[in-house]
Image 1 (tube, rainbow, N blue to C red):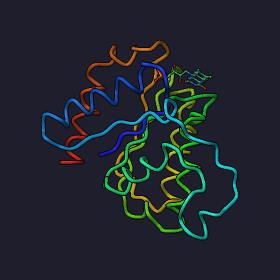
Image 2 (image 1 turned 180 degrees about the vertical axis):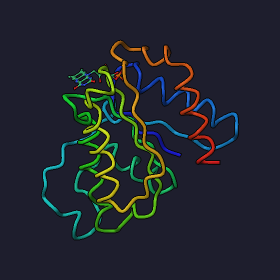
Image 3 (image 1 turned 90 degrees about the horizontal axis):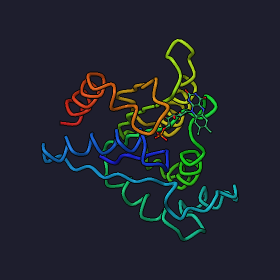
Image 4 (image 1 turned 45 degrees about the horizontal axis):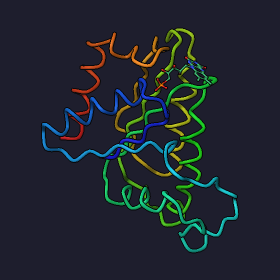
Length: 178
Ligand SMILES: Cc1cc2nc3c(=O)[nH]c(=O)nc-3n(C[C@H](O)[C@H](O)[C@H](O)COP(=O)(O)O)c2cc1C
């Protein structure tokens, strides 16, 4: 499994990714984490060259990222909710996956979509963040196998206050990828 973390800070998204990895490591299930915001990734210019040949003109960290995606069957996106939406880092990453659109390189891969926000679930703030991840998956012809929202996570490690929810989520992921 590949986990793509949408926040640069050592916060809730990163903590969740590490916890999932720790559990999967114990089960000897391969799991890698990347944080595109901490990588060198050019912005997509929209030149559309990749629609012709499935290759981006830029040489940067997306080359290795796309190789990783090609190898993995399950991709988990974890986005912080920002202005009710997904993070800019994840959107930049997604745009640069366009070389895989023409080759249908994401088709049939399994998607786990997670949004983490500060507000209460009743305020529906993370809904659009999650919907944008799911919409990306649908457009890429991925198969969404699980989606989840964590709320009440404002400070960097607030997610650790929700131990039961955290453990249930991790167990569900483990079951799905075992
Ligand atoms: C620019 C910005 C915008 C945000 N907008 C929202 C929002 O619309 N709704 C929400 O619930 N939380 C919002 N938050 C809070 C983050 O979603 C929350 O702190 C989350 O846990 C961040 O994940 P991280 O700890 O991995 O960085 C925002 C945070 C930032 C920095």
